[in-house]
Length: 185
Image (cartoon, rainbow, N blue to C red; front, side):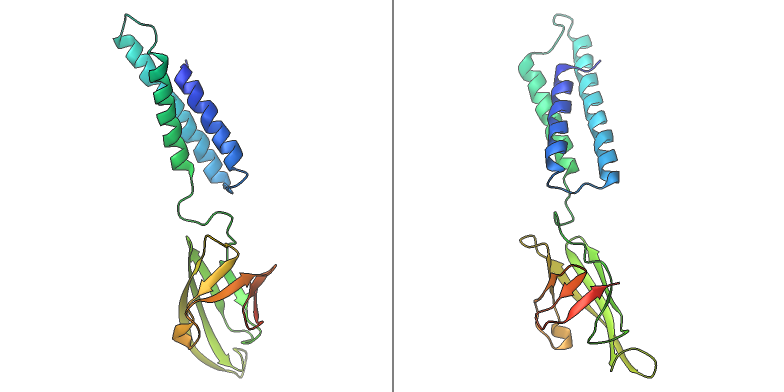
């Protein structure tokens, strides 16, 4: 039997999930875990109220204010656990392999870890194809900013470039300020 506070928590959390899903891109796994979490919160909340009722024979139900407090606490817990914490909302996922026309056939790989990017690659002369002289591998760090999640800031200082070079997502790749574009493979 679901209590009044359980129904209030269920109703409030379902509204949160519905409206926030328009802003936050929930994965399928997150949607399933959200429903399981919500079910658990409602179940524990109902059990807690029923358990209190069994201990208090003079009243069939706790006061409405107590039910509302429990509903608010359950809703706050459920919604706080559902919010993404390690990724930038609505950000482009820059992860992947890229081709760089300035360095044909040379590796360009970006791995995202939350909002932090690890960029690795190698340069060659003139490229990395057959008969080319291949240089040493390099690794750079970058980040995706919450203000404009379609931009990536990369520290090219270890390669003689700027510390915060801004790359902007351009349909299928990253456009750099010099006009060069890394195309995702």
